[in-house]
Length: 171
Ligand SMILES: [Zn+2]
Image 1 (cartoon, helix red, strand yellow):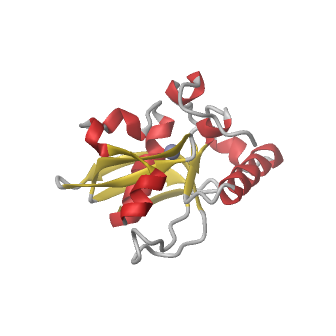
Image 2 (cartoon, protein in one colour):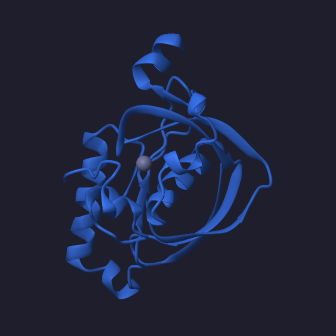
Image 3 (spheres, protein in one colour):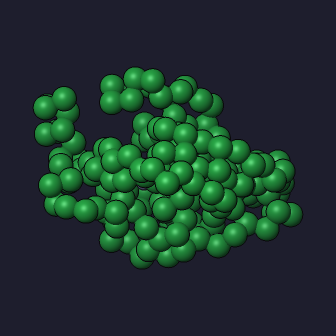
């Protein structure tokens, strides 16, 4: 699937909810399969449907350890449909993020340390859970895509934007 880059209208458009009856259809299941494949092909650790020009409230998070987050949990890709944030920490942590839709750049943005959320899983079940740390960060990043935002909307200073090549050279 083609990835929408920053500036595309679809990335500024709030996603619409998926009806629970649609979740178990072949059409929807194969869409999610392709979305996951697109994320894996691009070496992403998360992706949201608007990033492939589809305004449905679907996102995938797939944390794995990496040089900046060596303690990040290794997880099988988790599909979240119609996610919503129920509660979040008061505290926020500022750290680097990248995005498949904002190639070659990294930005330092504040995210809640933990969040409690609700979503429909790939079988249509309503699930409640809590994420913290790096997984909470990925969730908030992907959730942004479902409300028409990217990490660029959270930037506090131009000092907080760097080219990936420069960030990794200084790391
Ligand atoms: Zn992104």
